[in-house]
Length: 590
View 1 (cartoon, helix red, strand yellow):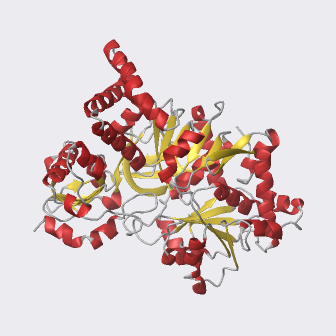
View 2: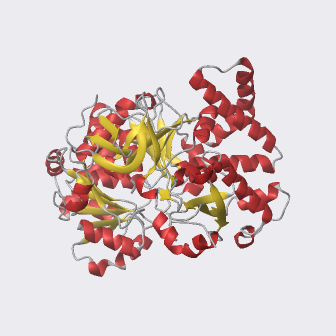
């Protein structure tokens, strides 16, 4: 196993020493991609670290970083670490109030923003942040206050000074403070050390080794790097000898994938749901909906047969036919080389997992939290069980208590919440295991099954315990549906609030030879309501009658991050939805 020393910067320094010409990253300029060697990237990191040192950054000081996913994110991350600092990620979609809270709570002394718009967000709260002394900007380059200006400040700093700072960092030192997405209240700052990240990276490289080390392996990252999952993915890719590219705008994702041609990806379940739904809608519009559905059923059956070893000659023949007609085209749309995708952040349905594996893209579903430095468990190419989140990574232990709560122990577990000793103590059991708040069980083969979140369990007026995710995940798979929130706590039966996928509506109406309706009219359209009812019926099959959704209400708005109802990682903020749509919930029971 590679030895990265005590600091995350060892990932870059080790690669630059062993293979200086290795194409560690690719950077997009316009529509073209240009490779950046390990040695060149290390030199860029050193130049920027010198700037931080020259402008007064002290070891242990906090540097807040507010940017979309891009090359400079990785550069700044490693430069701050090389200078001995601590990075505090801020989602680029954050409001001024959220930015103010994170900067104030973390005590950030330096802020790096991507654009003038982000700078304006900071300026709105700057008066209440006396600890901040410097603000730097990624765009536009070359101007005063830009990264070029910061690099120029460091020209008088000796490389030996940066090396002394870098090598003084140890595994127990703080690397980052990541603020939780706030689905259950105000965000708390999770303190993660260099050792936490290194334990995670080492576990990934050992546990998912099949993905790394392949000739010409490449990974394209588009999820927000302010989220721990994308951050860990980036570190593991760089440590594992895989060329890394970034894309900030998911609207350009397919075009970027075609140019970059990745071999594996990182995504949340909603991305896979939208890829499937878009493919189905496109086939319907072309009059090939029946062919697509047969191809999808064949892909699922073929994947299921792989688990049992009973794929008969007829199934294999059908799979070969649909590979030419359907699956190959879907793979080409993803760049033509994608073999694996890592999926986390929320559950992926078992059927979708089988579908994508059936078309040649194995989705490796994992489970973890910010407090566990992302993945604690993950399915691997050689150890996959659909419907689970896989076995624990090497070096990680997982157990459940008498109530079914999942608990984790190992080097990946954070050291605590910043400035909140009470919350930190409550997060651990008396014998030192981290309490996740999620419910599940570990089967006889060591695979973890997630059954819900303890705080999200509903108890109906009849005393029936209901796990909303079981229903929500299936309903959300329907092409019409964007989001779903199951309700019914203390109520006589289970209901649901449903939002429509506005982008999917035109194609959906087109396949039915009808003019598209605006969202405000679509929510009352009988055919649309029948489609949503079909999604609800499909979900109810998986539960008892007492747990089934009896009534639903389609909202004329969607849950979004801007509306305050979704986290940046696309998880629904249940408390905010229940507060803002209380009248709609009451209407279900009137």
